[in-house]
Amino acid sequence: MSRRTESRSGAQLPPPAPWGRGGCECCCGPGPPGVLTCPLGFRAIRPLLQPDRGAGCKRKVPAIVGCRRLAGPARLRYSGPMPSLRRYAEKDWPQFLQLDLETAMDALGESTEDERRKLRERWPQRLATQGFTPQRFAVPAAQLLVLEAEQGAYLGHLWLTETVDASGKRILEVTTMGIVREARGQKLGRLLMQRAEAEARERGIEDIELSVAGNNRRARDLYRDLGYETVRRTMRKRLR
Image (cartoon, rainbow, N blue to C red; front, side):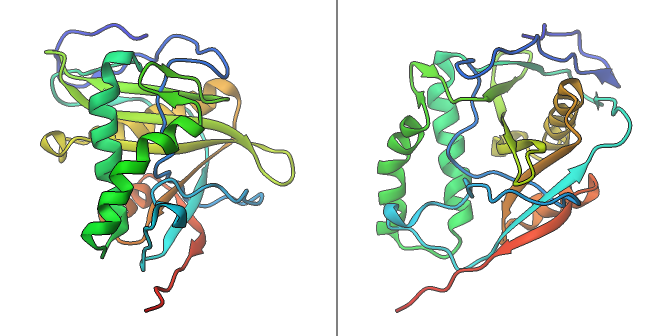
């Protein structure tokens, strides 16, 4: 767990302490993931940002998947009061669930109130099937980080999962990443993505992947600016 640093311009975000594998207390929900282009092949990852059909929710917009080949080390810098990055704790469940649901709702695009209601009702169970309950984050090969303000306010989260592609190559997947609305526009999403890349480098992983809803232009612009490329599009049609 990283310690909170003093507020200063250009402060460097300290990396969290080493994580255990599969049972670590970090959060990366069964919700939406994100990533952009992979030259060595792509593993079909579960689109967490889009609800499954079993939840009664459908989307018209395409999901875009991509990955990035990591080059040299990146420095994590933030020009504001320095937030802290720590492991998920049981107390974070209400804030995580609210933000993760909000992210999933946004990814729905055009939807009915009944679809949104079903998504809200079934989301906790969907998380539980992955090993994530209010009391414990025990998703195999995953970790969940929480971004916290100096005053202790919940700013966002980053869920990372290590996977392998069809060729057996190790991939770090950004399963879900979210920033609360009140804190957006401060480059905190960029900060979390840089943390994800730093984690991949620490593990010796060369490629990082994520999925993003087709209607989430802001996120797509961020990922492209960070060097991600699209490797797959998922399209869906609603039959009436």
